[in-house]
Length: 262
Image (cartoon, rainbow, N blue to C red):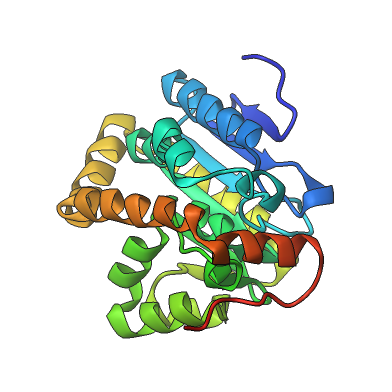
């Protein structure tokens, strides 16, 4: 496939395992529109390769996993532009349509869209000091890539409401107690354990893995599509709020936001 700038792709034909690695360390792996394009392209490419039977999604080996959407780009959007572009829909669709197992190997921070990327994976292995969160409320918006829907289904309404309305972070260990994170390891073991699991999965029948994944996702997706559509509509609506502009400006200017409290 074409040369990639924000994503590194590695394939091991002997094991059938591929690794998609976010690679914007200067931005803490916050993703841009180009990153989204490269992720979508990488997923499409890997799904079409018979030699690839399991995929690992990772950040930098020492972290972070992903700090979310690049605020410099997000701040350029308004509601009309978001609707016209169907912003983030290509990304969420790419994960929804991917037929092979995806393991998110989370080291360090997984915030905002980074947490949503992990939630879009099929299995999450995380470092014992990893932190997850959906802090969008702090910059005047809400999650827009499945975070509200998947977190409510995984944690229940009340815990999801607390995390989304406060923007607070939550540890990998606590998420493991809810069953959202599958296993927690010392950070130096996360990728090696993810590779071991991917290699195990790659020895299974590829068609059966696809059927198994589809069956499990059917339970999640029965009403998820409608929820995702509503979430995106509400997310886009925040782009025309004064508080959205203020939140972005405050972040970029490294100050506390002055939101409308009325």
